[in-house]
Image: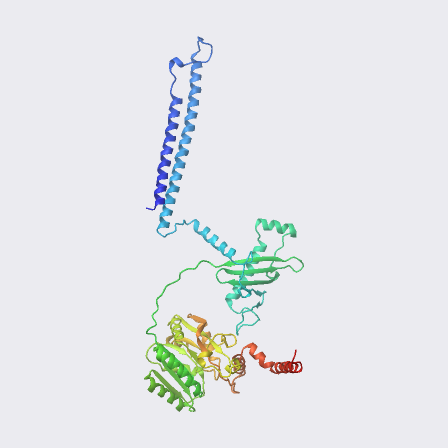
Length: 540
């Protein structure tokens, strides 16, 4: 037993001994007061020698008896009170000992009544930590978590990516529901104030004013990932000058364990399916990546190439044969199709051609560079009947623009960096995906009515969103889209052609680099003027 437990036991023993002594002293006082006096010391009131009647002595005895009864009742009450205090103290000591013992064993003792209070204290501590009531000292301007503003119809956001707009209606149902809930909560606070708030508002406004959703003017919100979501709401009646300002905070609770799993991916084969037409040079570069990553490092992949048309087919066969002869790798299939190129059709054929049971499919393009780490990420984030993986690819800009200041464009391996001027997260693309063959067949595969470039991957993605499987969507560092010149042919539909042009513009260069190209003439004119001034004033 811990030394503190022995100390508590010693204190308990001395307390019991002390209470016993007090109890004994009270009993002794009671006996002394109740004991009859000796005859020689008895003195009766009145004149000595005077005779008193029997009634007098009976009244005197009755008075003394009532006095002793009252005294006895008082002592009994004191004894009962002492016994109760002793019992309560013993119970507190017992609970304290149990708590100390539980703490020594690594288990915190908490009663059911204390748990809600502890949770409430934690939630209030989250408010204190967040920058809601008072400001926080930040390291730099980049440490600020900016607000996004909104009104009843639109959200104005800073972090846009490439699929979001500076101003947009909240299209996601969870965000719509969140903002609607916040506005309603603000109205509840205003229309049903607490007593002190109600008194203050009555003093200012006179009669009580009820607010509705139409009185919501604007709001701001931001989320600090480790604390919670902070909302500032403003309401105003049309004919009233004063605003009602409500601050709300949705604190995050403590971390909770959901599950712990061990996943063994050592025997998980990945069937990489690549639809292809022409572009043999790009395919040669792809095979080099496949050789370095899949054959020499990962060693758990299968390659399926679906080739459209006859032009370049012999060159593709030759490249595959060369790979086989140099490495001994035979885990591949070449499927020639005498059809017009259709990406969805090619991936569909590749998935159906596999006849060795269920397998993890990676739908890939010839312009994709991936690492061995990505293949394991693919295995970890797809599970048959449970979830599919849709990684966000980092798309590289035109190296001729990015590295225009260098004499020689660096090799592809040195271009694989995540920087603002080198590329962007392709968050509008859904073509690269990892999913099991059984899930792909169950969902119905691609919409083969989509012809040419783009659209088929979005249809498949939406099918999964409308289904029961978990869709894992996240940027991954080991997946790159290499820049290549994009041709938007006339055979595309107007919608496909618009998407193609947008993709072409986004793939070319970053905003600053494009600006340098747009203002090239103005920049060159400025440089010429500077050179002319220097030549005219060599001593300046």
